[in-house]
Length: 274
Image 1 (tube, rainbow, N blue to C red):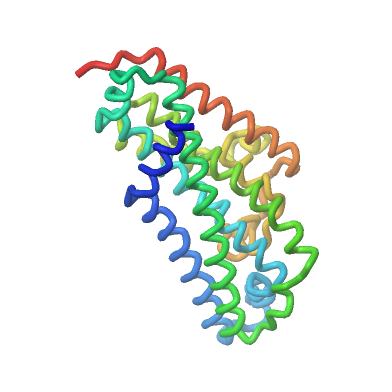
Image 2: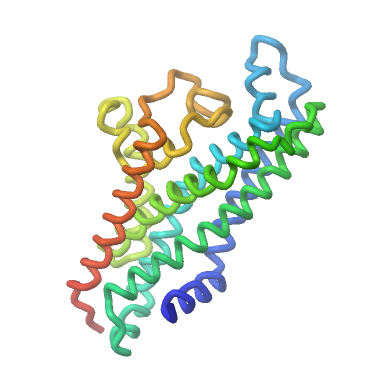
């Protein structure tokens, strides 16, 4: 617990934590407000119905979650890699080992802190996204009566938990890569390449790629109207094969635990010099 609280305090003081949250919240707000401001220029037959559906509550809640699952996953990879890589670059792990800390325990506690910070960021980003969707709907002249839909609000905590698991799993992949390479820059670069490489591999291995970490993370929420799945902001083509949400949840948990365990083993066996 002491290690965990110490890691959380350090992460909350790091600019990278706030920059990551700011990028997600800022880009999402920009998208929703621009959609609302330009809705009048759309004509029937140009996808106007699908675009306005993004701003129509209660469906807009899913649109916000879909945005977070996509962009948030990529930024979580970068964030996880940046934090793990800095432990080697700045010599923080070496100093902790010199104090007698368990390497594996230190690494697991560090990732647990990352997961908690990502959970806080997800809740804050969700609140900002919903507010931006309300503003966009107002600009577009779309009624916002569905904001208080009881059934949707009661299901929202579970959806947020699923989204958090997907984002945390993406962060764990970046964390593992940076731990293996022992470098912030290499971890971030390889992490980004892995993320986009998996997206492009859908063309060649559609039946396999759905079990890979980032596709599974996006599938945890099921179909998310508005972003991805061929909707506005997506490719516009047919949706790629996707695991059922509950199956994807199991796959995500396996990838997450495996990535953290791999990081702990690498740290335990690594030679720390200097």
